[in-house]
Length: 304
Image (cartoon, rainbow, N blue to C red; front, side):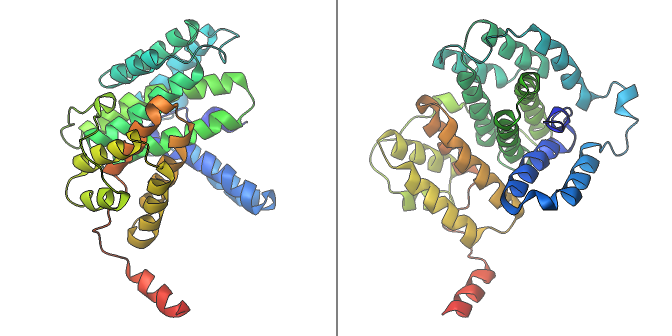
């Protein structure tokens, strides 16, 4: 509860501060809190990072600006903020706004939706969908962190017990997505793809064929996955296949980090958005055509 207030207060390190918070909490819940001291010392040190910059407390630096705006916006949220009606239209409108808006416009729209009585679920649907859409527009290190940061903030949102902290985390997540978009744009042109315009192709396709296609054309694989899911295909088959390929083909910590986040988060989206988000993950999951890691052969030899 104490550290959640600070984990997402700035955009430095493209979300790693809040990622560290949520994953440290999950780890300590698993291994035991008797190991907390070194983890907490490292976590607090990381959250204070502002290398090469003046002291943020006495400066108005770009990574801190959304957090200062959102601390004021939180005061305008009503007491009944956790209620409301699920509204897929509001979700779609927010996703489309996040396609090109500023950080301030994003959080202001979230406040407006809450004040209008839109359910928090519909807002989270939009934030997850927008993160997935950025993967579709330009896959790579920045976009995958939009997904993993949204995963981490959502975990902190669900885990902390203070309403004002939860509200602040929600607004920060909305503000961070335009920052991720611009950081991705700095690395090259963004494709004009929209997650709400994903269409299923004709015909039938197997999960294995989808992951084969990923090695040749990520866009086609994404449409195939959406087609499979939209026609009633079991998403667990996709999840199981994706996880196996991470263990067999993964060659970077981000393979595990991204897949853990995406394959966890699709379950918390509303049915209208769940399949689209999982289909967007085809832009980053490991492909069946990639080389199997040498470690796999060593493991198989050891247990043969």
